[in-house]
Image (cartoon, rainbow, N blue to C red; front, side, top):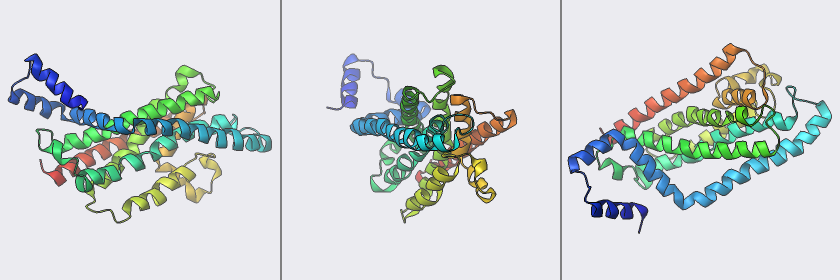
Length: 287
C-alpha cells in the first residue's frame, strides 16, 4: 500500500474530509506544491542510487582533479588566483556538476511527461493547471539540486577546500541552486516545446552543456583563454555561478558591479525560463 493510499484512508477515517469544492480550491491554489509532493514521493524509488551519485561524483572529481591534477599544477605554476588548485577548482566543480545535472532531470523526463509516459495528464485531470505542473516539476528538481549542492559542499569542507570558513562558504549551496535554475528553467521550457526527440537532447548535451563545462572558467580562469572563446563564459550560467561561488569559498576578488552582473544574469535567466515554461505547458496542455 502506498503512502498516499494510507494517507487517504486515515483522512477518510478521521471524518475531516473537506467538501469537493474546498479540495478543488486548494488544488487550484497549491497545485504546484501538490506536484512537488508527487515528484518527491516518486523519487523515493531512486533515492539510493541518487544518493550514491551525489556522494560519489564530488569525491571522484576532487580526488582526480583537485588533489591529483592539483599536485601537478601547484608544483608547476604555484598558485592559481592566489590559492591552491584544489581550492580554485572545487567551487567551480560544484557549480558545473549541479548545472550539468539539469540535462538528466529536465530533458527526457519532460518528454516522458508529455509523450512517452504521459505523466502530466493525470494531474491535469484535476484542478491543477498546466502552469502549476510545469512549475512544480521545476521546483521539485531544485530541491534535489539543493541536496546535491549541500553534499558537495560538505565534501569540500572535508577536503579543506573552503578557506573562508564553513559559514560563509555555505553560500555556494544557494549559488549552485540558482545557477542550475538559470539554465534548467530554459532547458525545461525548450524540452516542453518538443513533440518528438530527434537527437535534440543529445545536441544540447554535446554542444551546449559540455562546452559550458570545458570553457566557462571551470578548470582555469576565463581570462587565460583566447579572447574569441570568452563569450562562452559570458553567456554561461556556469561561469557566472562559478565566479560567485569562488568569492564565497575563498574570497576571489571581483568588482562589485561585476558581482551584481553575475546575480542579475542568473536571476534574469531563471525568470525568463519560468515564464517561458509556464506558457509552453499551458499552450500544450490547454488551460
